[in-house]
Length: 105
View 1 (cartoon, rainbow, N blue to C red):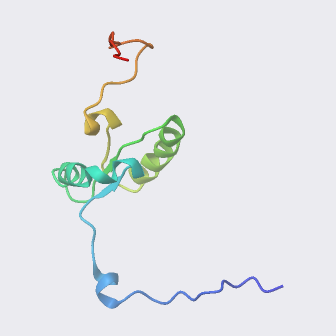
View 2: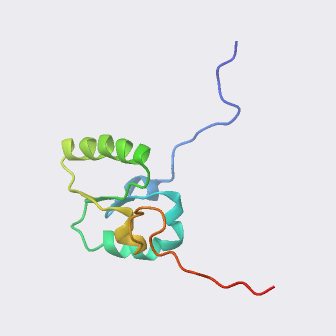
């Protein structure tokens, strides 16, 4: 049985090998439209720091493992709730903010 992949990986270009990242931002894909917001926030932190923004409960568990890894390797890790970037209030009980609407037929 052939276990090789149908494509080949080659070495990255020399410029890419020498590149150094300033900061790392780990955010859910739903925040992609807000890239300018979280990138400008991440760039305010010291070089080499990691910004983590977990979304769901499952993502929070994954981010907890990732943050521990980065801390063990000497990185400063900043974890923010997703509400801090999206400016939305955490969901509360049903009916909060409900309004009466008159429909015209």
